Length: 190
Image (cartoon, rainbow, N blue to C red; front, side, top):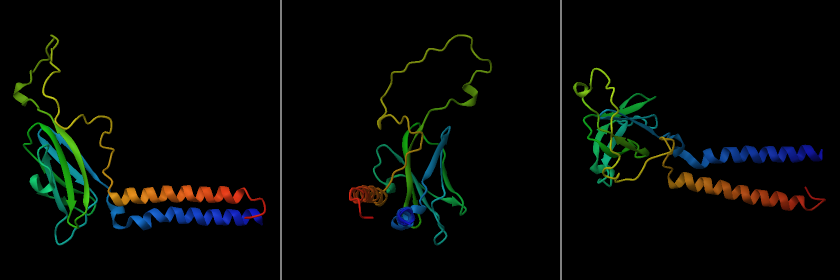
């Protein structure tokens, strides 16, 4: 009987802890982020975070490293379905850019940096591969926004609400652990 009460209380506590993040996150939990890709001089963004409001899914902006906010970038309206929304910019010059997507509800779906590299035109490519080794220089202008290595687009920009909820959950876990350990040290209490 003693063990079953302990298991029941533990189960209820775990169920409440599992439901807490979804309850506290509210509408921002639906935001899933964006995926940015480049093909030659075309930059495309895809998201599934936006909903159709008054005939609009939202807007995407392509910002250079000298542009500080959404309004300064090359803006395009998102098009798509309830499953996926997208936008694409063509004729983008080589460089480092930031893509930001803002849904029509006003929520930011996400932002991601992307590097557009120069591609040679099809007529400039040799028809037969050269047998001589090619020498290339690695010196040149340094990237203005730093190196984007290691994450591969897996990182998301979490807002203050998400980080606050996470910190609250960690704090609640520490307090609950301390409470359980303190209760365990007293032999005749449950």
